[in-house]
Amino acid sequence: MKRVLLIVVMAVASLLVARAPLSAQRGASSTPQRIVSLVPATTEMLFEMGAGGRLVGVGSYDRFPPEVEKLPRLGGLLDPNIEQLIALRPDLVIIYDTQVELRRQLERAHIPMWGYSIKGLADVTATVRTLGERIGMAPAANASAARIDARLRAVQARVAGRPRPRTLLLFGRESGSLRGINASGGYGFLHDLLELAGATDVLADVKQAAVAMSTEMVLARAPEAIIELHYGEPWPNDRLAAERRVWSGLPSLPAVRTGRIVLLAGDELVVPGPRVTLAAERLAAFLHPDVAR
Image 1 (cartoon, rainbow, N blue to C red):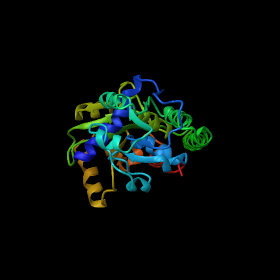
Image 2: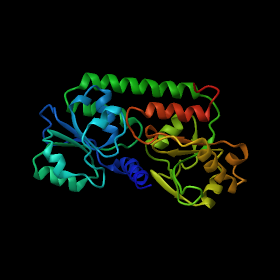
Image 3: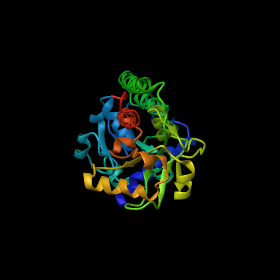
C-alpha cells in the first residue's frame, strides 16, 4: 500500500508542477554521459531515444524498461538519497521541479541538473524533444516524439465521430469500498488522454489534476462509464470482479446499470512518458471496443 501511495503522489506531482516552465539548469553547455533520472517518465524517455546506456542511477519506482533493474536505486520524489547520488559522480541529474531541497543540495555539490514539468499530454513529446536537445541527442529524440505523436493521432482518428460516453476516471479509492475516491479532474495529461480516447470527462469543468469525490458527487455527475487505474502487477480475476461489485452499492448510476466499469492495471497508465500511446489505446479499447483496435 505504501508503494502504491507513493506512485500516486509521483503521478499527481507531475501534474501539479505545471505552473513551472520546462527548463535546463546549470551545465547546459556540456554533453552528459553519466545521467541520473529520478523520474520514471524521463527514464523511459531516455531509453526510448537510445540514451539508456548513459544512465548510472534511477528512482526507486522505475519499473520500465527491464534494464532499469540493473541500475542503482536512489529513492523517489520524497526520499532521494543524496549521498548515494553524489557518489555516482553524475554529470546530469533529472528531477521534478517540485524537488526544491534536492535542487539546493545539488547546487551546493555543483552537480548539473535539469528540472521539468508536465502541463498536459502535449508536453510529453515536448519534454522528449527538450531532453534530447539537453543531452545532445536531438535527432533521435525528435524521431521518438514523432512516433509518439503519430500513435496518439491514430487513436484519435479511430474514435473520431463516435458517441463520447460521459466517463469518470479514477486513480484511487479504498479497496473494497467507495470511500477515499480520487479522480482525474479536467486538467492534466490523464484528462487529455481520456478525451483523446473518445470520452467526455464528467469532471472536465473542475480544473484540477486530482479531485476528492464523495459518493454523492459521483451520483450527481452520473457517469455512463467508469475507469479505474491500478498500478503494478495485474490483479487476479477474482479480485477484479470483487472490486467491480463494489459499485453495485450505487445502482442508479448509468455505468452500473449497463456494467460499463473497468479496472485497468499498469504503470503506463499514470506515467507521462513514451507509453502514453499504450495508455491511450487501452482507454479507447474500453470506450469504443468496436473501432479502437
